[in-house]
Image 1 (cartoon, helix red, strand yellow):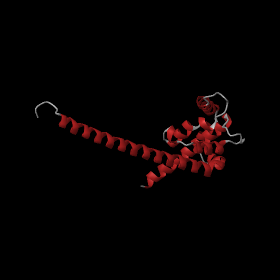
Image 2: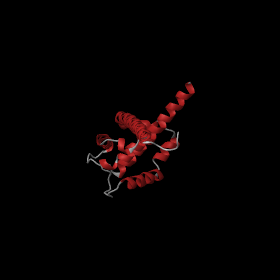
Image 3: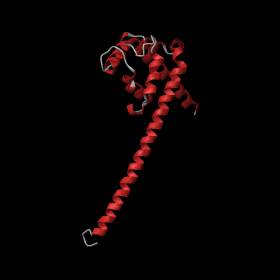
Image 4: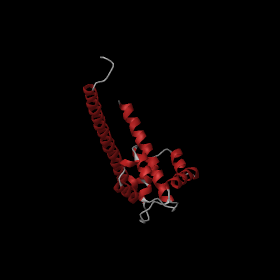
Amino acid sequence: GNGDISKSEFVAFMQFALAMLHCEQQRKAAEAEEEIFEGDMAIEGMLAKLEEGKDALFEVMSMLPPELCEHLDSPEFQLSCHEQFDALDEDRSGSLTVDELYPVIAELAGTREWVVTEDQCTRFANLFDEDGNGDISKSEFVSFMQYAFAMLHCEQQRLAAEAQEE
């Protein structure tokens, strides 16, 4: 309590500071691990739903409100999809390659791009690559967006029904 820090007090301070730094690094590592796990689970869940139901798009569309079906089939919706596609097509090749799909999958799953794996991008591409060339064309991207919006609507309806039951 004399206002000066002695050598022994400085050593104690450094020990405390290093211990706190170690604890903080451990906490951040655990948070990152949890974020990766949660993100991976969200992506896998999304891919499972897509793999199960993609072939039922026309059936799902028939159950949607008419105004939503009209919107999903409108020129405005297609233009919006084309703009999103162009923003994702970094190399301006006219198709989305697996490595250009990371932001799409991360956004859909509500996670960060660095959580998405190449295998997950490949599975996603395979789902919507109707011509089998390994890339996603603009028309395939529009089909995907229609499906995604239809599934989002159905999920929102399901959650609203569950909330009413409670």
